[in-house]
Amino acid sequence: MNLEILNYQELKTPIGKLTILTEADTLVACGFLSVNKFIQGSLDAEIKRSVKPNHITGLIRDYFEGDLSAINGIKVRQPGGEFSQTAWRAMRKVRVGNVISYAELANKAGSPKAVRAAGSACAKNRVAIVVPCHRIVKTGGGLGNYAYGLKAKEWLLSHEGAL
Image 1 (cartoon, rainbow, N blue to C red):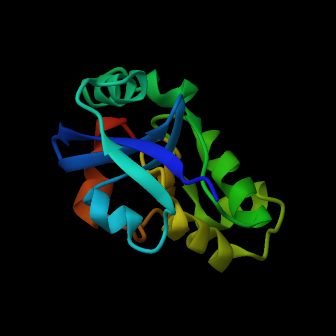
Image 2: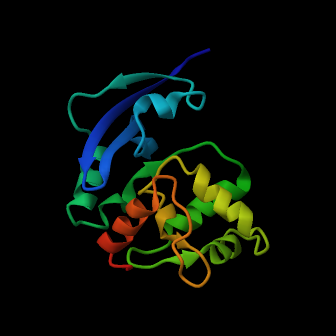
């Protein structure tokens, strides 16, 4: 069995250290966790630290520096069932400065009654920021949850002009 080889980098951001894992030109994980937390039981791969920033890290840095569209073209891959994959594609279509509710996400993913599954897809999202689960809120506008804390979600939405 061939192990996947992933490169990782850490990027300092206004809301904490962001760990970025890539395989060639594809983002496979991105979040405010240590690399060890990402690989514990969820990534069967050999992880190597990249010394030089790669293209993806540069685009994410650009996003944090104000070029909010920089992340739009980043190719992503993450494991998940059919509904989660559809929900993640729908999340990527939510434009900067906008939010949608979990119910709207369920509808856009083709299962209007699957509101809890929409929330679960947000919680399972391994490529935060790029698959913008932070743009999904409660019906009525409450922020809802965010794996990296509500302060981070609020900062991201403010950065994007949604709050």
